[in-house]
Length: 241
Image (cartoon, rainbow, N blue to C red):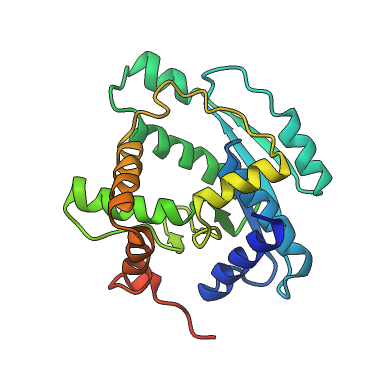
């Protein structure tokens, strides 16, 4: 996928769901994975020509699990003139050493989000941006059905009342396979998640299940995605132009 295509998908999501308001300061969650770096490229590109002015801050949450070299990401942010912040935490030590969690992902995600939200508020940000893409939307729908027995997926725009800040997901129209192509084409400075639980989650199980079902039922992914965008979830109703 070329940058122009990434920007087109991102612009459509932003416009469809009115994700940006005048003079927003948006905190980008940068994990170091391909998705968050694609988000960085997308929002930097959109900022250059979008008719509504906004600014960006990039934030990485360091779990304290292993020594991580952020120099390439920092250099990329500097080339884009986007301030880059690393928040050092002891999340890994708390979860794996102190609490010895056998199913750590939920608690880890909650703690990471808390640290990210706090830093974004300190920086005066009005919005948070996560790098969830189309595959994440579909996987969340199936995970909710399989493991919780409810019809649910996350929303394109969510107001977090406890933090008094709004979360946006500008990559919801982008396929994960296209992000892989984008990563390879532009040689994104990706580094591997140091978490010892990485790759052994319910989401990985659901991803594999969708892959198998799609091989047997071509077009399934798109049908599942439209079941979210055109379904009964109020937050997915597109705002009028």
